[in-house]
Amino acid sequence: MNGQQSKDARIPRLRSPRLRSGRTGGKTSLQRRAAIRRLIRTRPVPTQEALGELLTKEGYQVTQATLSRDLALLRAVRIQGEEGRLRYELQEGLSPQGAQVLPELAEMVVSIEENGTLVVVLTQPGAAPALARAIDVARLPDVLGSLAGDDTIFLAPQKRSSAIQLAQKLRRLFGRVET
Image (cartoon, rainbow, N blue to C red; front, side, top):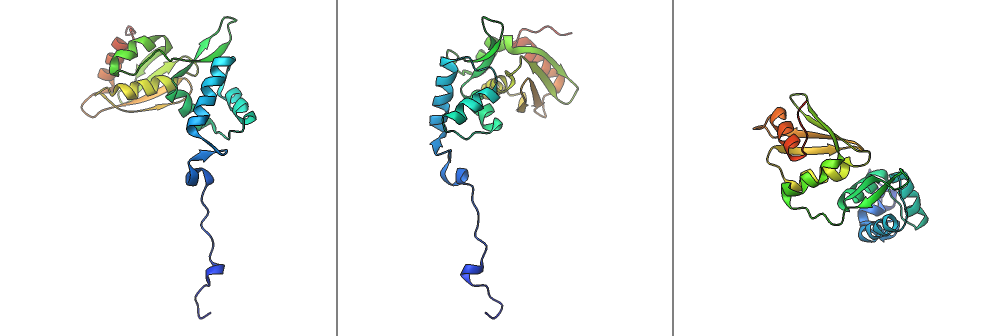
C-alpha cells in the first residue's frame, strides 16, 4: 500500500444522531415541548426527574439539561399545589416584555445578595431557570449574563456596572428591601 491507507481502513467519523437530525428519540423538540405542556396541564408533575420518566414512557430521550431548557422556554415554574406538594405549572399568561414582567415574578425570589463581583439570586425550588430566562429576555443593560441551577442564579454585571448597583436594581424590580 506504499504507506497510504485504503478508504476501508480509515476510521469513520462518528456523529451523534441528535446533532445530525436535530431530533431526540425520533421526535422533534417542538413535539417534545408540546408533550411537556400536555403532561404539565393534565397531571401534577413534581420534579424534572418525574417529567423525564413520563417523557421516556412516551418515547422521548431527554437529559436533565434539555428538560431544564425546555421548562424555561415554556415558562414552567414549580408552585405549591392545593395539597401542599410542589408541582410544575405553565405561566402562559406572561408575555416577555422586557423588565416590565420581572416584578410579576417577585414571588419566585427568596433573596438577592452580592459579593462585589457577582450577584446571587436565590429562588423558590425549580424557579431559577425560568427566572434567569426572564432576566435574559428583559435584556437589562447592567447584566452581562446569567447562569441558573435549580434554585440559584449567578448574574455577572456589565463592566460599567458594579455588582452592588445591579443587586440594588434587582431588589427594586423584585420589591425586596436591602438587608
